Image 1 (cartoon, rainbow, N blue to C red):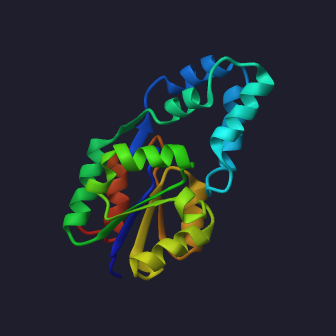
Image 2: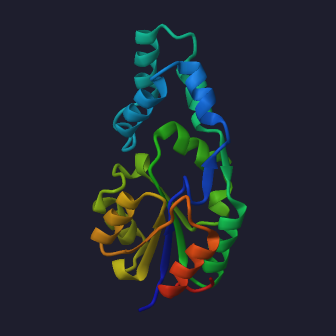
Amino acid sequence: MTIRALLMDADGVVQYPRSGWLERFARLGGPGFAREAFRREMGTLTGQVDLRDELAEMIAAGGHSATPDDFIALWCDIEVDEFMLRLVDRVRAAGVVTALATNQQSYRGTHMLANLPHADHFDHQFHSFQVGLAKPDPAFFGHIIEVLGVEPNEAVFVDDMEINVRGAREAGLHGVYFSNADTYGHLRCHLLELGVPGI
């Protein structure tokens, strides 16, 4: 088996929200606001519903003084994992095509594309709001495989959510679950077992 493509999730794998962002989010919105906002965000991931409209409706109902852009700014406060990106660089240098495969609403995804260095490390970026499909839908992975021009069993996908890994496996890819308890060493072992070059 030859691995020709490495797909990586964004949040929880190659980037993280800045420490304390959730507390700041809760202070702006008050009790229960964050949970409802995240629930509504799920409906915006394929780009068919606008997150700003959803937030504006919530703010009006709750009588908050914050604006939708205040919350969107917190969503966009992101730190990249330089160590993980160096791993991606090694795999890419070994001749493997690299791709970011991430669920993002349009505001956060657009911010990432314009401000984060992922284009320096990944050959392709697939954001759900642009693709019109979202993980764990196997069709999301099928779209990526078709664009990359590889067979499903020639691709490895890494994600910090088991449900997304299962979606990738249903599409025929090799899925690697990278939990928040795992280390870089754990991930390297998984990728080595699958024959990913450059590890």
